[in-house]
Image (cartoon, rainbow, N blue to C red; front, side, top):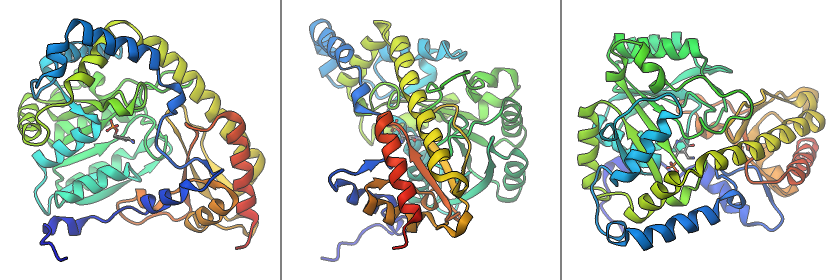
Length: 401
Ligand code: PMP
């Protein structure tokens, strides 16, 4: 067969990560590889009640076609949810998307022409790189440090490339777990307003903090920086805190951007599942979210601590990382100390043989990968499995395959 596929498919390849995931089916593997939340933490009872309430009280609306912008009761609930995080929005100032992944796709569809530059963090969420490349973007990576994107570098790259947009995960980023400081957040907003560059804030992890809450989102802070709201889009998601299977995300931004994104969505999936939206709306209305958040924060905090303690104990100076303040990931770098392997791709293969999986960091870089980096998710294994998995990792590090 030689089907005449669109040339844009040449811009992307199936990810190296996907190849690795094929090996995860091996029995007994402890996985630090996925970006998934732990299914054991889903509030099944709460969602059962919410969906049953919907089918009893609003079956017509929940099972019918709906507005592309989203199910109005959910938009209202999401506005209230955002208000708890210091963000003032009207329901018309956000649209519901099928996961935040769709919000990223709609942004790409609405904004990117082939050859356009976009700036992302180096490293960043792989699916965003792929999604923007599918629209023909030249994806340029801005250097990051342990406090997230370096704003001086962003400024330089914006001046040099005049990008269509700058994509940031300012809070507990994927893959780095890093969080942009308050001071940098304000500078990013000033930069957006001054250079008239659209900044996209992707925020699926902001609610998953372990101790102190992170600084306010760019969206919350934008009211303090004149003109910045006109150049800011925000992607939210219920995936990491409630359930990714619901596929509930949302996009907020300037009215003209939402109008174009809505038009693109209309021709894509018409609207996000009304049943899922109504269930999520009822879940939020019933006031369940605060307890759910408290629970997931506590569990992930314990797992993050267990993983960091085990890494220090078992791998010592062969690995460098900073302890995450939230999110799902530890981002680490192999130091090569003691002559141990410093290539995370090589280590990943040996690790699978020892019964533990993780994702090498290289695929997360749009340009110039750092082969010594790796991402370890502490989300899905319990504390005992985390310790055992890190012990296996230490064995893999010492083995000479
Ligand atoms: N953005 C980031 C940074 C993510 O890590 C993810 C999920 N891994 C998404 C967006 C997409 O999430 P969803 O579509 O489930 O909301």
